[in-house]
Length: 151
Image (cartoon, rainbow, N blue to C red):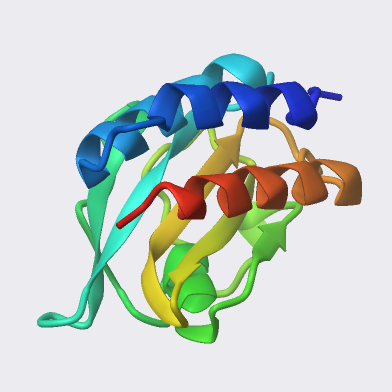
């Protein structure tokens, strides 16, 4: 199990005095991807209110879908509901959007700042049941730290 106390301290130090959203999300995705094993995609989709959709942001992994409609797939549903969604087996998720055939489980955590949806953190794993309750708590704490640094 990753040490999220240490990871979150590293994140805070990494993002200190930086206000650029893209730079902060790029470093956050790199840090998380390096710190948590068994991930094959770690990144962000940003909410575009004009199009009412999620648009691909900084990530680590293979090329990905660039636009996701609200309520579509795991990311779109988590964003629309503003709730974390963990999927143990993506083949059982109705309307699953497959960007990488190797993905077998997924965790999506919405980024909410001042009650507004900023986007989502999307994690894919090449194994089923990757995101147990303890890992979800750690990832959510990472997002809580990240949100403090997003303007």
